[in-house]
Image (cartoon, rainbow, N blue to C red; front, top):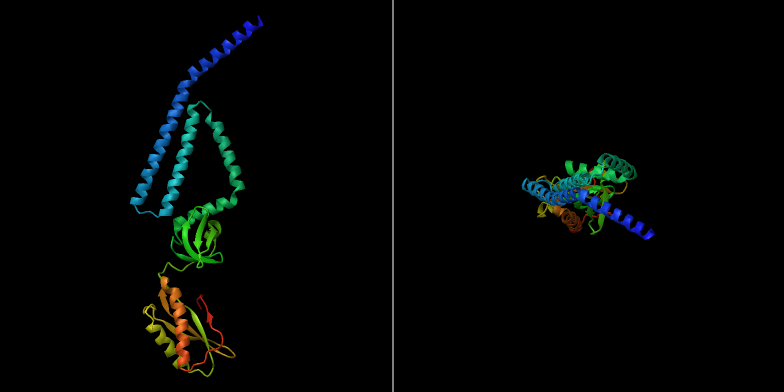
Length: 276
């Protein structure tokens, strides 16, 4: 008797299970059909959007950022549609998702600040990939602008990651934006130096250098008079790529020209990259 009861109960559960599958299968099939078609459509839309942005010559970083944002928005919409097709109530799910998003946002305030900073940098373009900038106490060439950080390569080939939040809210010196740059050098000369002769020597050295620009014209002037020396400011202009070469060559050539003319320099030479 007990065995017959178990068998009857099992058959009832089995029949109920098959009945549930039969009733639920249309929703299941339609939900997965929407999922697969939606994934294919998202990939197709993403490729089309990227091609349009490339054709319109948008900034590569901005194009990638917008395409990624669109991709994730479409994926979230597809997921909500998928669970709706399964018969799951979406209103409560959206409320849970919103609460989870708020909690995550509060715990990731620093990351959100960097995210907002990355958007500002991409939109307003204070610098581009390939520019040499100085910010947050570091100098380097921009190799990549990511959503949360900007990657710089320093002069000694070190990789520097600067958070976009601090970068967008701080002072940025872009050495590449204008295309040219002034080299600021200072020579320390003794007081028995003929200033006019020293200036002529420096101007001759700068005018003969092939990488010193003729326009703007190079300058030489007395910067300061100290207790034991005359500080002579030397200011040639160069293209950004030639800045290091011009700086080094002018120092070397001026020192050699002063020695040949019998002009005595003080035992130290100051080089400054700041504007006077």
